[in-house]
Amino acid sequence: MRRISVSPWRIVLIYALFATLWIFFSDHAVEYFVDNVTVFATLSTYKGFFFVVITSLLLYGLIKAKIFQIVSMQKKLKEHEQRLEYVIQGANLGYWDWDYVNHKHIVNDTWLSFLGLKRKDIEQLDTDWSERIHPEDRMIAQKAVEYTIKNNLPYVIEFRMRHADSHWVWIEGSGAVVERDENTGEPLRLAGTHRDISSRKNAQKEMLFLALNDPLTKLPNRVYLKQELEKRLIEEPELCFLFLDLDRFKTINDMYGHTTGDKVIQVVAERLKSVLHESDFIARVGGDEFVILTRENLEVELLCKKLIASLEVPIEIGDEQFKVNASMGVTCSPRDGSSFETLFKNADTAMYEAKNNLQKSYVFYTASMTEQLLNISKLDNELKRAIENDEFVIYYQPQINLHNNKMVGLEALVRWQHPIDGLVLPNHFIPRAEETRLIIPLGLLVFKKALQKMKYWDEHAFFDGIMAINISNVQIEEEEFVEKIEVIRQEVGINAQRIELEVTESCFMSNPEHVSKTLQKLENIGYKISIDDFGTGYSSMSYLKQLPLHKLKIDRSFIKDLPYDSDDQAISKAIIALGKTLELEVLAEGVETEEQKRFLIQNGCDSMQGYLFAKPLSCEVLEETFRQN
Image (cartoon, rainbow, N blue to C red):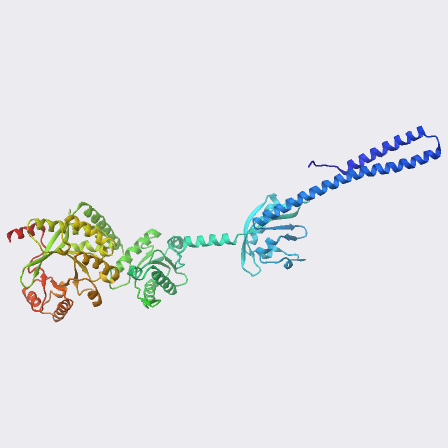
């Protein structure tokens, strides 16, 4: 529709021009045609009426056009206001309008809803809304208003306002000066919007918490620990760094599941926190690892004892009770380091020293530990290289039937043919190989070498007895252990009934259900199972009854003082009797004298191995022995 614009002055000018022209021309026209005074007066009257009618119509048209323009503008303005209201509602914006001179505020219902208010709560009320702004944020809001007044630019800020129920609501506020005094330029009105951003702020807070804290225990995590340590080192260089690790916690996860394990960790975290000073700092840096920072250098040993003591009472989860122990390594700055990485590494080193120390649960770091750690690292690298380069050889110790003195089996014993150090015995590298899980590829290598040698001896009619091969607990815990050795056995072509797998008592303690299933699978295939070093572990007699065992091997520690030590006599007799009761073969290890042999024969032991008959022999020596016999 075409816009019609008519100003008041234009209407007046049109009217004045028309009236002047009318009066001038109409009077002269009447005088020209009429001479009679009466007729002239009558015509003048009619002329006046006609003028009124014409001018009224003219005014009517002009006024109607103006009114139409005003109504049209009002309609468009209303449409714009409705659209704006829809946008504001759709964006969930609270609108405010501030009469800066009279300090009056106008707000919409959405704005009120943010603060839990009703319209009736603010009617006829001259409210200073700044009173509802959080004290810490008032300066921000004040500076924003001053900025927009001074620079005539809009602002956007975030601040908190008090809800009707007294909690704080996070607001994203924007505003600008919308009216100024034409003469002085002073602000008359400000207007803007508010948005409730509490959900976003809470989400940001939660994200920040998760970035710096452990979600399970709500303790600070490694990132937070690093920040805190670096801050404390600046403020006070002398502090102690305690690295705490739970002993054998993996057993709980394996036997009872991670849900139970998580509950145990939560209880542990609460107990550790309960003995700390207010100034101490605790973080969870791993599955079962915690770090404590303390400034109490003189009392750090006392704190260590309190931390260990806090775990002495068994932890109850449902119907189960768990006895949890811990090992701790302690470093102090600046003596043991002045950076996060150094203190963490040294405390970790001391912690592992504590795990290997049966006397103390906590150990203070010393420089010699780092040297020892370097040696361990060197050993790890050399072990990896040795496996890759096949530097391991097998020695074989004969097993002798005590009743006819015939060789009935061989035990395969691994040795490391080190390129520099020469022949290295297993006690120098097997424990570390188990810790690093290198025992898995090493165990398969030994298994394959022993079976290949059996195949060679079969082909040359040297040996047709049983080959005993030691199996590590780490290997048994592997899900695919049975499948891996079966691939090797079938490739080499050895009957499983001629292979005896030796396991230790301790393997039953970590995950008895898994071990039982694995051993049963092996027995079903045909493998024989024996328990090595029997009597030195803590296995339950019920395990022996349930497991598919064929042989008990009496540990050499019970044989060396026979037949003179009464305790060793009693233990050996008991193991032999137990074996007979369970219908298991019994073999004695470490037999070195005829007296020991005689005692074992008298008490019904089946077989032996030891220096009395032969030391572990290299393949070459053993084959020469076969040839001579």
